[in-house]
Image (tube, rainbow, N blue to C red; front, top):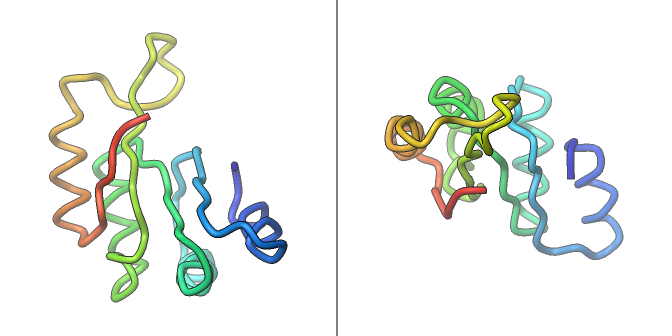
Length: 105
């Protein structure tokens, strides 16, 4: 899925395990919505930068551990994701932010 709104619709209709494949820049309102969703379903988000992972963890605060994270890898088209040599940096930022790293995509 691409947006928190899409996730809300799916969870409202019974989905219990969803993945937002786009890296999110989470503000306070989005963090509130993700925390509420995490109470109802397994939620995973993509991380494309160390800064984005840090911001996500800080905004989610206590609920950060309830949100799974997958690191987006650049597939060679240089449009999104991190280069292979940046994966450890992003993984470290995910852990430092209190988020739960579950893989890459």
